[in-house]
Length: 440
Image (cartoon, one colour):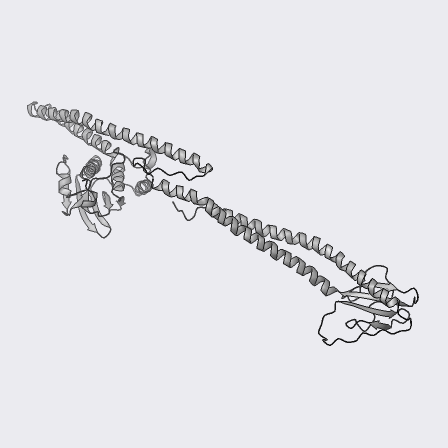
């Protein structure tokens, strides 16, 4: 299974937190733009009005015919965003102004409310004089300064909000990582959990949500261990209980063949062959159900494995005499069933060859039987790859299933090769030192 393609809970949570932080920042910026911008507009209007009233009160106490002038400061580069003009209403002449105020009158008519100049560069308010109705005071604030103040307020608020959001994301991600550590530790302990080995059960992660999982895994392990012990006991008992009667039947049939008349010998011979086949199937089944038993590897040759076996009318050709470090009983059962399959599919000869390669050992069996159609061969390969031993998988009979189980127990695999005629199967497994796998 491709683990890289699976979604990660932690990555999904982190992405969700980041998305929430960004949305929160954008929504906050929108609210700030609306609320703070609106409130600042009112505050700046109020500031403009109050500044205008102060200037108006100062000018109202001055003589009517006095022309007001403002001296130029030493630094002409300073910014002046609040300016005023004293305008003659009838002529539009500027009688007085602040240093940065325009030379031309910004307004020539008194306005009851705050307004903008024609060029939209100033926000202005006007005041008239009771003692001199022909004059009016124009106080203005730079429109660019007002916009800049609003933008700065929104920008700084947005940056602060995003900074706090990112900080919250980092803190939450750190906390999520810490909370996921017990789950990751539990996963590692489950991978190494062997119900048959004491002390390998997953330790408590100390999290309330993980307790049901730990209990379920522990209960499952206990049930599996009991079942394995039961299967081993049954296998051992069945081996003793079935092997002796079958061997006795075979012995009695062998004696009957010697003493029987010629007319009965073919039937007795068929009965003995059926008994031999029954013994092979029984041995294979008992071998396959040796649950949890590691292969007991020993150095053997192919001739050693084939020596005790007997096949009527099947010619065996052995190529290579390399030593194979395998479990003799398991491999003998595999060869029994594979050769029996070859016989059942009209094979008359089977070539068995062994070879050592950099990746390990290989044992190839090539018969001259009916062979297998390409579609069925592809179906069998797919079933072997995913260990699908169901009736509809295409793995007919016990031979291939037993071979796959035994080779997997040896750390190897079963390969079905394409050949021009007959059927060819190759068993491949890694080389192992004898001393490391033999029982003490």
